[in-house]
Amino acid sequence: MVDKLRAELERLPYAEHKRVKLRSVHLVWVVPLIAALIGAWFAWNSLTRHGPTITISFSSAEGIEAGKTRLKYKNVDIGVVRGIALSPDLSRVLVTAQTTRDADTMLRADSRFWVVRPRISLSGVSGLGTLVSGVYIGMEVGRSSEQRREFTGLEVPPAVAFDLPGRKFVLRAKEIGSLDIGSPIYFRRIQVGQVSDFKLDASGQSVTLEIFIKAPYDRFVTSQARFWQASGLDFTVDANGFRLDTQSMATLISGGIAFQSGLDGALPAAPAPAETAFELADSRVQAMKHAAGGEQYYRLYFNDTLRGLGVGAPVDMGGLPVGEVKTIGIEYDEAGKTFRFPVDIVLYPEQMRTYFRRPPADIGQDRLLDSMVADGMRAQLRSANLLTGQMYVALDFFRKEAAGRIDRSHEPARLPTRAGSLGQIQDSVASIVGKLDRIPFDGLSRDLRRALQDLDHSIKAAGKLAKRLDEELAPQAKATLQQAQQTFGAAERVLADEAPLQQDLRATLNDVRRAADSLRHLTDYLERHPETLLRGKPEDPP
Image (cartoon, rainbow, N blue to C red; front, side, top):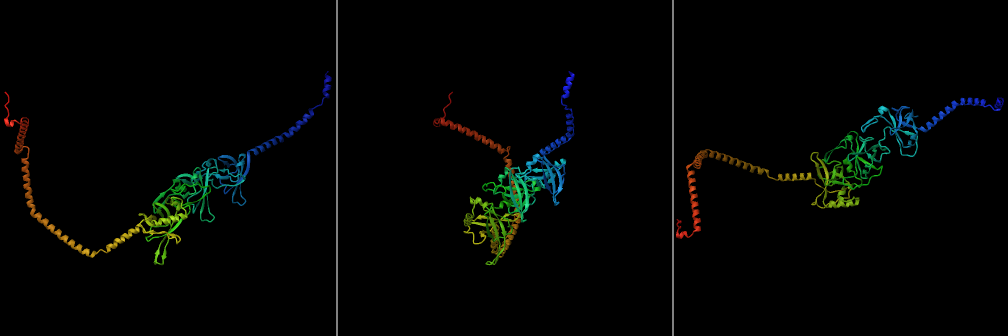
């Protein structure tokens, strides 16, 4: 039985040789296979975790270290610096950064990069956290749909973020003053925006500033808005006196800009569209003088002195500034053989809205000014400040003046004028002096001398009379006073309460009172018994 089983087993095929062969093959290839799997895993992990490699150029690599400096967006790591090299022309530093997979969609054409490091400026302090953690490269995602892998880094952090709601506007100024990127912008002393950028114009004659106004304050920037520099202290001495103004303590150090929606009393205007350009005035006074267009130029001739009247002096109508003095010149009058001093003024129709009661037009305004002049309106020099001696031009109505008109045959047209209040005072003083000159002071002086001599004689005579009265009447007056004192003493003794006269007088008064009482009783009895006068008083019954 056993032999039979063994014979059957011997007939079965052997697999032992094949198992030994397969085991030897597996042991040879297992290590490369594991290495390949690990490599594939690392490759897959690298592809899934890392994003594209980007290059950022900076002017300097200060504080940037390969393998340490992080790339962050909103303080979240999105990459790390892998290498630092110089550009081929040696003018820039090329920083290579490996980004994460999440940063792939952030690398847009208008994305911005900058180095975040501690910064101390007039507008504030930033980046203090990097003193501990070290500098890093900040990023802001752009709005473009185009992808990019090479960027130019900013030297300073952007003043305005892309996702901040609001609108940008443009300001043009002759000079930038103390303004800088990040300088605040105020509306009614509330900070509503800041300067985001500035550049010098190609002509070199002016500066263009880009500003950003945050929502919802951007709706107050209208088409009639006025902007002015609010840097430091605005100290002005003019026809209105002394003025000192500032927006905040911050503007004293770092400067700033303020604006107003429009002129005081003007009709509300629509909000200005983004990128609208405005003029940046040096002060609020200058900003309020600027007109939106349609300026009217006129020339004035005054017979008064122009001392105290300067370029920029206001033209006033009823207390409202409606223009300003542009130029003051000198010209020779051939006909009169004398010099004249023309004063050119500009009127701002927009500021005369209160008088016109409707938005002025050029033709309508000409007719209206003609009628106003015919009604007695004249230009007059007036003193605005006795302390500084400043003068201004006033447009006022003088109903008693002869009818006048605007001479439009010249360019600019000529407005009629009237002597100023100071000139009127001078004329009055001159008239008084002329009248005084006609007074015969020589004759008056002789008469006055004689009158003074007569008065001197009268005073001397009065002195002699007083002396005589003192010598002759004084003894008699003394004796009279003594007699009066004696009389008053006797009267006092007679009128004293214990004096005999007083006692006798009181007794007499008592007798008179009793007699009056008896007489009253008698009259009463007779009224009751009138027959007593005929029959006598009846006897009393026993």
